[in-house]
Image (cartoon, rainbow, N blue to C red; front, side):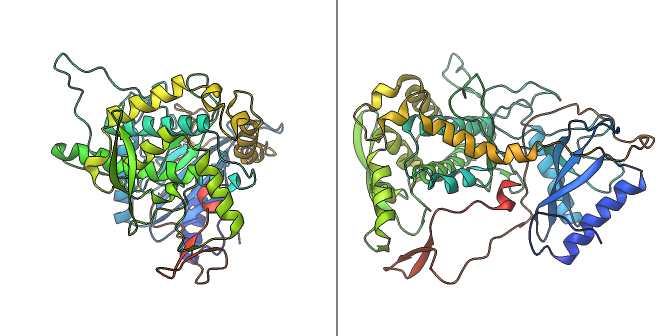
Length: 450
């Protein structure tokens, strides 16, 4: 009986469905597809990393890797179909996962499979969660100029969700920019789209790019399985909801750990050149609470990170995590502020900082970041031995993808919920609540897709 690497302790019903999928490939003599690993599975469906050799031959050839996401039942299939329709709206967006369509097939997936199939290209650089997990190895905070550029990627995602590009199939990927206002100062109506599952596992680390990512890898948004669209009169509410999630991702990249919505603090921010106090969930950016049972080295590393943090960056993250949405910045203001800081702040802006040497364009830490995020890619891009040659079945999948992007749509479907250890040996105990607060998460196969 076939077994597949990837998620451990896969349930019997999930394995049954995966084997049925493999049987479907065999039934139509589709030998170009190979299941490489299970990315995740749950009560509603599964996602697999696949390999396809476009022109089987005795000579090893480059492998096209991609991800498919499938549902178990009609209810989840309907939900998956909705997700496919949402992802189609982002054709041409630089910072959002792109749908791929095989020639001769529809956007619903593969015609000889029952039900919809969501298909995207595989990327092996992992997720922001993996990047955070590896950061502890460096024993230094991420440079401010890296953080600003990662923040800009997140802002591009906010623009994309507010105004999806809706490009045609095969549209070239373009950086998401604010549109110019009309003569009355108005921009197009926002979509009202709420992602619904914005977190460090659903942001992928892409590759370097000469447009905005010559120093820092591109980030890309995935997994719209829980997305919903609010009414037009609630469009700003949707933006502020997505913004708070993006603020939490920045909070974790900075080194703040996990947001605890039950614990907020009054924090000072600068808005329009004026200081003000707002209630925010970013309280750990002012220092870890004395109620945490934190080892001395953890406390020292956190203090180091906070002392090295650009106060302008801190202020914006605190605002994004404001308890009251009215205290979060307008999308346009946030984007313009982040763009301004990316453009204007050079290494000399941080000349007085402890880790000033990390702020230069050729700092060694850039190589560390790229080397860590590229490690999985190097493993994933190995060539496979040639699959058995076989003539394509009539009407079967041709060899060239019509849309080919280095992106990955992961999965919702209640897949891969991590178990929580009842002990606190690997976490931080909050004495005021007796709650075990996890440390920075370690990378996982499910999250990284590899």
